[in-house]
Length: 112
Image: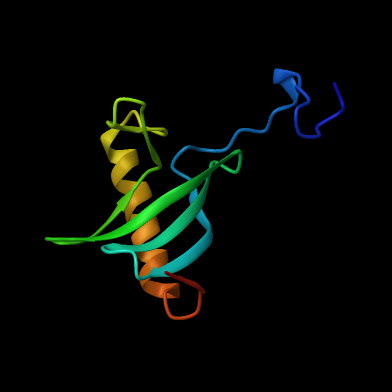
């Protein structure tokens, strides 16, 4: 199929899939007034997948990055995106935190 618009399906032969360790921050929105939350971050993985809603949080032991989560009907939080390899999780977190450190003073500010 040559139609690549949203909702269309491509032939597997046409796909150009990048490396899963190729992670780039494509959007960073600084947050003020929401407790320990410091920023929302969107990342692109392998040039083929965008993960929206990653978070930068200030914890007891310093800053950390969190992948998107949602609350279930029973009130428990569960991850939406889970890297299957621990080294990938660490790599994505380091990429997010590095971008936050470098761009936090020049990015869009959202406040309560």
